[in-house]
Amino acid sequence: MAVIKRDKDLKFIRIEEGHHVDMARRAAIEYARMMGFGEVQTAFMATSVSELAKNILVHAGSGTVIFRILSVGEKRGLEIVFADRGPGIDDLARVLRGGYSTSSTLGIGLSGSGRMMDELEIKTEPGKGTTIWIRKWL
Amino acid sequence: MDKVPILKMGDTLILAIQVELHDKMAIRLQEDILKEIHDTGARGLVIDVSALEVVDSFMGRVLSDTASMAGIMGVETALVGIRPEIAITLQEMGLELKGVHFALNLEKGMELLQNIGEIFYGED
Image 1 (tube, rainbow over the protein chains, first blue to last red):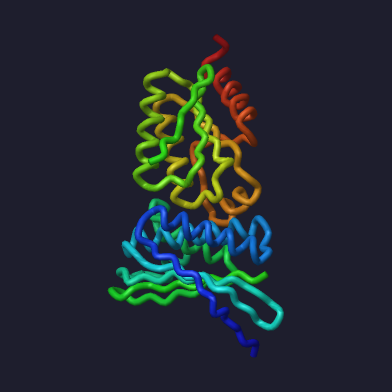
Image 2: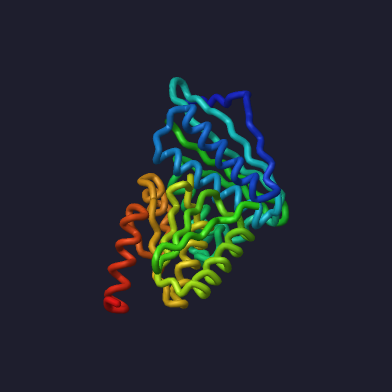
């Protein structure tokens, strides 16, 4: 089985206000360009970061976004983690289907990110918080 | 805090969004636009998003809501300057922008609203 190597260099961005979301989105664009992702994949990552960082702000109040470069053999990828200690997601299956009302940013943001990224993993516990990992491979 | 300038050309208001809007800014911008429509009697609104890095679901909703509100005041809205990667992203996200007309750039957007105006109001 292929072993995923995680770069030791991490970039942390604390999300507490709207402009922190801008910082996270900028960081995603910088990483994507530096690693050589194309325009569309860069836009997919930047939009996913925008959605998920805003979800932290809206639903948990605050949290952290972490960027890290991955490699499996010659293959490289970018992993972005969104962690908060908010209320957690109650009905995850429903949220992932994007079935929540369109006025909620949670539904479309999560389901859309799932489609735009290569991988999306969620760990959520009601009352304890949510951690989301998204990955995109070159 | 940045304010988004609203320009007027003939019957049309032009709005070039340069930065990502956060909740309060977006709401204030909507109020400013509606006030401007009321004060000027404009018939069209062109929103240029070519400077935006992304259009996420929040921004999509702000744009769609703004167009709906303008529509209630009798104003048609054209969204212009959507870059290819943003068009693909909107499609992938399944984000529908309701009540908005689309055109490639500012010039084509103005032209489009002009044509719609002629259909609705007849030539003055």
